[in-house]
Length: 524
Image 1: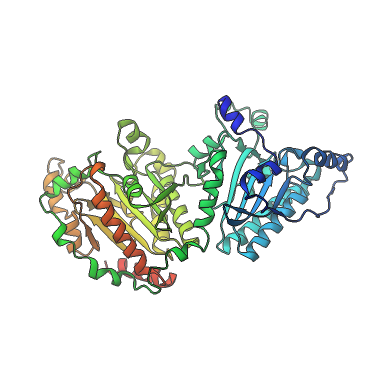
Image 2: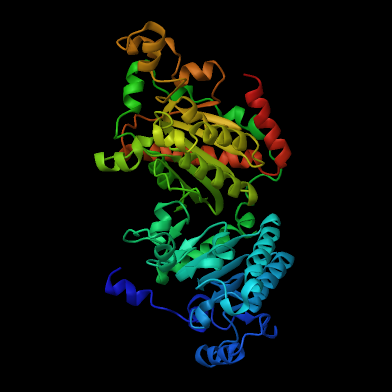
């Protein structure tokens, strides 16, 4: 990390951090009167606590209470590394637990700035029990449909990492922050491993799918207030123009006549080739041109952040939605980084994580599909490609929120189907969707790969074919768009159509939405 970054992300005490993040004069501290604990009768521990209080000006390793961030009310907690390394003993665990219990009762979001060396050694096993207690309280808060966002600062280690620091709906890292369960010295002394450069940093965690995004300190107020707004009830007021009672897919039938806008000039094989052009707009191109803002969220919280499949939180006229889609890449370097738009199991697990988050917060899901198929290879099989696709299909089928799937390019086999289980499935007029590639079909059916063009026609893989077969519900006109610079008419059409889709499901119960989706696929 450069010198400038070191200065920008230097250690910050709890009082200073609260003054930076909270609206002036709004922080109301909670639970300052919890008595000290010394369960092991540790000599010198009371004196150590007194010294930490004199040094930091706070009574324990975390200050927590109610505050406002750009007017948005929230519970705000800040750990202070100056207080015995921000370690978690009974008082820290009790403050966090009580704060989550109160937040659940008052229906408040929670933001905690995590900074800790881990469990507090002076309190032994009692310190360890705080991990269970805080995690259980977070589970109840989550089950109540409430939002929690931990911000990982330098350092966040040990028992705090293995409890409240890593259980957020959206997890933010500060640039260069050290984050990990076992410290580097413990790893090296215990098993003798040589650790790579950048190990256990926020950037390392982002690359390995453990956190959603990294935000510079000077932008955190803006990002946190936007997240609080997206997860509040206030956005419903901005969506009041939508009908109070929707009728689902039936309400969209009347607006589905696009015949006058479509062109049938391309043959099936020409459409296959057109879908494979790197100039063709990607999911990110559509997301950035349709929605007012987009916050990309990263990682499957398990192994990796698969860049072949992107997703996150987007806004349309104040309406938060969850969006996702494959990206192949423009340059050769980007194509390699994004695996040519072929997701690994980690990509599908990221999609499931984001969809479950959408369901928790009652957000519509918009899925853009353009992939040759799921990646096939040793590492994909080692990490369970089949299970990941099956899990994505199953979870998507059961979503209690409306799901719209839009085929924008090449829809390849189960890899495309994994994120295409929608209440409505739309298809760009020159997109394709098939059991496998024409080359693969030709090779299997005719024992040669030289009849791919013929296979493209025989497979009935175009939007027109699939609309006629009632596999897709709408054909989206492309208005001659073949590259990003020409995307505006298509994006405008899709924005209006997506607004209509959201309106059609407004007021429908989750059970009714899921039942409609089940019946859509049950008929095939």
